Amino acid sequence: MSEPTPLPASATKAAWDKLDALAAAPGGRLITPLFAADPDRAKKFSASFEDMFLDFSKTSISPAAMTGLFELARAAKVEDFIARLFAGEPVNMTEHRSAMHMALRSLPDAGFRAVLPEGGFEDASAVAAHERAHMEKFVRGVHDGSIVAADGKPFTDVLNIGIGGSDLGPRMVSLALTFVHGAKVNAHFLSNVDGHAFAQLSRELDPARTLVLVASKTFTTLETMTNGHAARDWLAGALGEDAVSHHFAALSTNLKETGKFGIPEDRVFGFRDWVGGRYSVWSAIGLSVALAAGWDAFEDFLAGGRAMDGHFRSTPLEQNLPVLLALSGIWNLDVLHAATLCILAYDARLARFPAYLQQLEMESNGKSTRLAGDQVTHQTCPVVFGEPGTDAQHSFMQLVHQGPALVPVDFILAAEADHDRPEAHRILAANVFAQAEALLAGKSLEEVTEEMKKAGADEETIARVGPHRVFTGQRPSTTILYKKLDAYSLGRLIVLYEHKVAVQGAIWGINSYDQWGVELGKKLAQAIIPSLEPHADLGHHDGSTTGLMKTFLSLRGEG
Ligand SMILES: O=P(O)(O)OC[C@H]1O[C@](O)(CO)[C@@H](O)[C@@H]1O
Image (tube, rainbow, N blue to C red):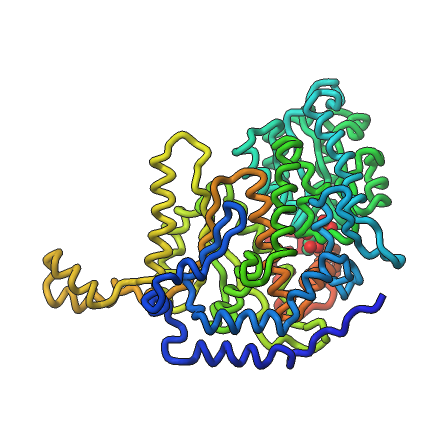
């Protein structure tokens, strides 16, 4: 199959130049004058899909800049990219793979197709539906007591062992959905190779009641294999070797390795290489979610993702939520040079959402080489960080309000809570609106002076302290609101960001679906491991690394 020639950087140059000129013009970075100039700005710079509402009016994107951003998207051929993505073209060009995670949440007869390694296509929707049926049978079996532990009694706990995409998605979604839908079994997650993590879990869990899922697309990841074997020893040590086949299942694309680990084939839940790790929560990797929150919740989660896929695929750029989120991000990052993105979900159930987005955004778009082989002309991904609101307000929001760096924020809030204290939810919501308003409007020295005078401060105090109390404002934020958090709306929210990342990658001309940047460190770690045995040959490294290894060994009394 012929792959289209990647666009040269020159294709978007005029559009970028226009945006730069708009931002450099007097007032081009200010937000409040845009509201003063147009009472309908909030309406014009917002969009919705079902009950999900995206407000990006609190950015310095003027009407001319918005036009310029759509010109940029069209110059980068975003619409063609969307069509190629959904057609299963090998948009992951460095690995010659489709990025067909949409098939995982499609209806069985949707007909999404994906490139096969040996050439041609397979019906990805049908493949996904087949594996889903396997998962459903297992999940329902665990819940109805037909699939039980080695002692014939039900499982009460599931331990997912995986890292990166094989951990972050299931962990984040399970936390959110077990709150909303209740926990059918208790989900636990082990990702870090740090032995303390396993030590703690093995203290908390009863092996006799625990189902262990070894989740790894490749089934070769060092951390997961190390932890998988530790869990196997722990369980076999407590219950005997025969218990292993009852208590283990694998979530993987690598049948050969799962077999070697001793997991019977009917306990292997598969997916294909057209599912990237960070896009895999919709696949067998989501088994812990389905076990914890229930099969029906998992189906609703897929339905939410599917709905956002449909919106993204068929809505003009001007009303397309992922596109609008992508373009406002591009304005902040590439035109205003705001190098970070702060994710503030005002929802304790979404505590792991920033960590999830860190992988989604930074592993997808933290790249410097364009598909055309040249180097990017712009920054390609913000540094993503975040915490739940209101906790964040009492830690890093000081910097966001008054630091010299511009830190764009995404606020996320459900209108309805899932608890019976409406007053607490109103307080939470008030904080979202107040934070965004404070970032926008700020407080001038005149206002501070007036306020301090009213409070009885003398001239000297006002002169000394006043400037410290000034907020410049003009700090951008976007706000995402929806009726309530449930499996469906969480599915939609995740896919909003998935496709935002896709659009940004297309504009930057990079491949959002590979992750070569994680390989070098993995290889070096493998090479260093034998050198950290007592009195081993340290090998050849730079002076600092050799010195650190020596000190490590000597502190352990082994060097
Ligand atoms: O599922 P696997 O193959 O164990 O990989 C885990 C994670 O490791 C990475 O390859 C990066 O280290 C991620 O892309 C992936 O999500």
